Image (cartoon, rainbow, N blue to C red):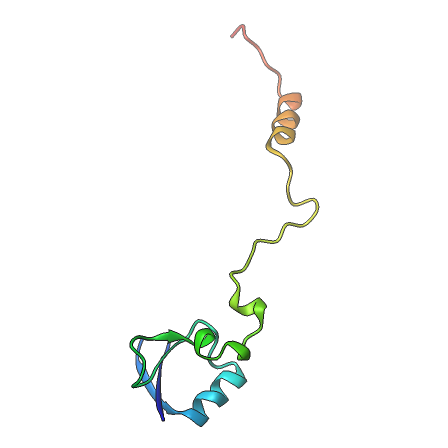
Length: 91
């Protein structure tokens, strides 16, 4: 069966099923790449067409990672600034 995938330029590239599977297995196509074939009503992501080919980690949106020490509460920052600043109401 003839398949199509969109390349980085948005061009439709025709491949046979064997080529498509090889591209998925080699990582040339990721879970978000769009695929289409004649019996599809619309373009589908690779992750939807081949869900077992992608790990949960790749198909889930990336979550921000917070390391200890990276986050200092705003109050702590304000307090440090305030203690280092000389305040005067009589200017």
